[in-house]
Length: 438
Image (cartoon, rainbow, N blue to C red; front, side, top):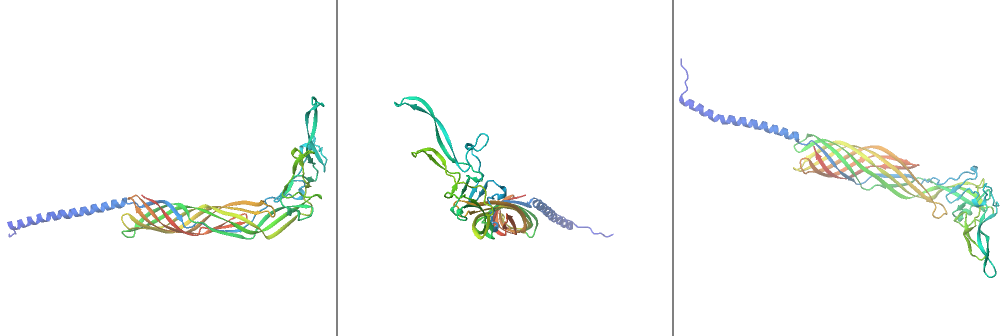
């Protein structure tokens, strides 16, 4: 049987081929192992790359809330005099007062009975002990001397000594009477507008990277909160309708003292030689009727009759919540650019304060004033957009800065008939702070 028998030459070639193939086989095996190791390392590195970041910082918006104030100039009565039906009581007015009178301690006995004469006057006295001397000036004894030290007007039922008024014009409305008035203002639709200037706030934003669009661009979701103040204040004057309620008090044929006047009134009590016995010891009060004259009270309405000065303020804050998609582009090893756009909501809480005042007609330094306030809260929906540059100090922390824009609606708040339309509106601003990756 014939068979092939390798020669020595063929065996040598086979051995040589095996020697040459051995390194190649080892190299192929090493290359495959390295690829697997690198892939595993890449997976490990990817697993430890931070996916989330927390931004903590500030923001300064170009403008705050714009407020349109309306129905300004409503000032209620500061005083309300009791009607005639309530009888003898104290009544206060914006230009005077007529108070209930009563017996003084030195014109009644221990039982409360009047000792003075109604419609007349009474005196008070003091007693002192003095020496009695003879013709040579020697003291020969003592004696009690009684001296009048006060001369006063008696209490008279139906009249009062306790009253006052502010202007001579109050005597000219009805001859023989003093006019006492209370005033209020009714709005004629006065308006004022004010836009709040730049205002600052704080914010927190959490961003989560979800995927990669390309080698340098990632996408994810951003959610954040921010707090900004609202402080809008305006002052000015508006014309309002003047309402005047007037009562008339009879002077009983007497001449009223010069205005301004407050009774009871006194001057010094003098002796025959003009020496002061008692300071403010002589009463000069002019009493008037204790009750307003029936049938004479009036109410007058004068459109545009008064100028009301005011300060109106809406103060508070709004808490903003936002969420939307985010993009991040890695520009260099340390610099990145990120942007976010989405929906937002603002929970706003404000206090509306109105301080209004006007001058009492014909009376110097007398005013009618009011301070009124109310609170309100409202949730507003809107939108936001942010664009920021981020610088990484290391793989965990960095700094950011950029621009921000937002858009919200408005709501209305009222206080005692006045209105305030509070418009958060559109605003842009700058933002900055630190980022922490985890």
